Every structure is written in C-alpha cells, then in structure tokens.
Length: 110
Length: 115
Image (cartoon, rainbow over all chains, first blue to last red; front, side):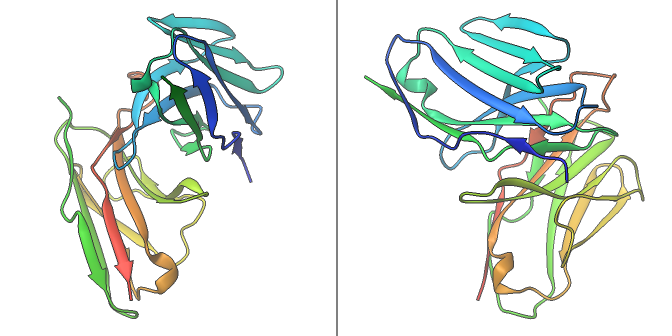
C-alpha cells in the first residue's frame, strides 16, 4: 500500500526560529506534493504545493522536494504563535488520488 | 471562493442504521473525495470520484458506498453503521491535476457518533 510518513510530534520551536517539517512517501511515481495546515477543530487548508525537485518559496514558507530520496519538507521561517497547528503532507499518487500522512503537530513557544 | 458544504455537522446514530452524509460543491470541480479523520490515524481516503457516476475506492472503503448522480453532489453512505465508524468525515473537491494546482477544498466536516 502506498504510504506517506510523517513524525507525529509535537515539534516545539521557539518564536522567531525556523520550524522544519519532514515527510517521506513510498510511491516513486508520485508527481505532486502538498502541505496542508490544520488548526484544531478546523478543516485542512493548502499552504504549499511542489511538483519539481528543489525549493519553492512563498513568504515565510519554503517547500523542498527530493524525488530521488522520496522526501518532502516544509520550512517555516520566523515562526509565529499563529503557526501552531498540525501540518499534513499530501501526495498525489496518480489519477488524482491524494493521500495524506498522519500529520505533525507544531507548537510555537512564545 | 470555493464552497464545499456538508449537510450535517453533527450526527448521532445507532448501530445498524443507514447513514447518509451529503456534500455539495459550487465550483464545478470534477474531483470529489471522502476522507475520515481519527486521532493518531490522520486523514484516510474512503472513496473518490473524478466524474459523474464514476467512483474509485480509496484505502478504507469497507463498510461504505458512495453516490455521484450530479457533478456538484457526492454522498457517502453507511449501509449499516457500526461503532468503529464513529469519526470525523471530511468531504473535499478539486479540479483535475494539470488544470490547476490540484488543491483540495474541504468542507467543515461531519462528526458522526455511532452508539
């Protein structure tokens, strides 16, 4: 079965520091990768998508993809208390079927 | 803005009852999905549909069926509810990959309790 793996955390990061979230996936043929943020009691919302090897930056967020290592990461610079949430890694494993990791809980310490 | 509406936010049902969870999206998206979310297990795909009357099994389809008679509506059916189906159910929709980012738009969720 195709899988997406994440460390469940919680990951505690001081305010202003860089938070680093990691994800690995099993299906080598996957082409599209996503990071969703989910606040407690709310639905997930997309924050980053990445399709090719390398880095993609959007404001304080940087997604990194290494297809050879089957590894996706999300960096959050200048972490804020409002970044405290669960971060879900998602992978399109083909035919638009999107599966998720279990999520990493991030806690930003004021 | 894309809106995905799930008809019931909270439901309480008894074991053996038939349960319908309805989801409607207003952005003409081809793809629609049903996930369940449980603590420690994350989001797991139950079924998805890429067109009217088309459906594909996800990772945990057992005990569920779906219906997509119209493009905007995707229903999840529990033929005979069981206590292990107590969960948060999330519906989502998206454009096909290649047409857009493939972003999933989620509804607010339906919390089902089966007694």
